[in-house]
Image 1: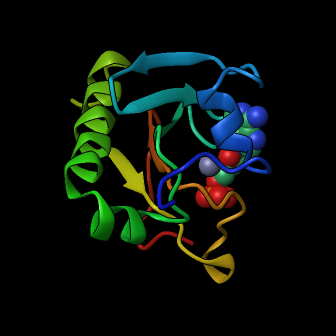
Image 2: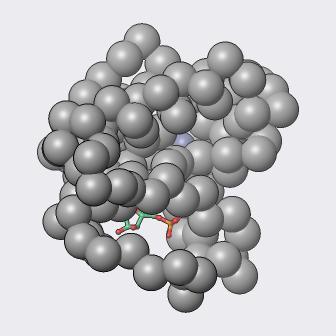
Length: 119
Ligand code: AMP
Ligand code: ZN
């Protein structure tokens, strides 16, 4: 069924606590944890508890939860005090854009200068 946990999904296993993570925030619908390979002083992933392959698929199926992910991304930035200096929310979508985990996730990046356009 759409949104059900996938046995081979790393982020479903973080949601179920089968794999440990440094969790910074949780809500009824989302989990936020520090990226294991941080690209900035603040690098946190916000994921929905439900499994969808990417952000667009999540938004089409569960728009309320997609909004929760965005709200939690802002809360993470405020919690790490990078909201004042600015932060970036990134949804890599597809292999060509660097997506490696096919469970929707927002990257929240901040705490250093962020170039535009991104690489
Ligand atoms: P993406 O490349 O956009 O699919 O992002 C996947 C992200 O997950 C990468 O930035 C990885 O560093 C991160 N990642 C992979 N495994 C873990 C893990 N066990 N805990 C935290 N972050 C992870
Ligand atoms: Zn998953």
